[in-house]
Length: 129
Image (cartoon, rainbow, N blue to C red):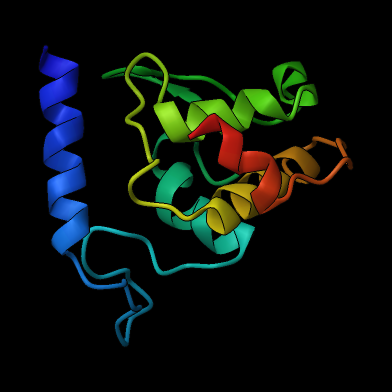
């Protein structure tokens, strides 16, 4: 019940929000992210918890390393995680377009010590929504 209420709230809030733009400082406005490329999305969304180089962290929570992460070999794993969240990570499905999810997935899978070069497209993301 709680997750359904949360999903409804996010849908309601996102439906009324205008398309996000970046302000003069490059910060997203509104309920969605304005960044388009994977590196910018990683800096805006992921680096605060998973750290700038993807090394992960522990403290108030446990943030797994994305650097040299064998779980990223399966392209569906990061796509599903970004869209639906995992453990303490929130879902981003209402805040990111399919193109943004694909860009972020490709960035994480081809950087941070990862070399998974089979690119994900927006069309690949769509069925996971």
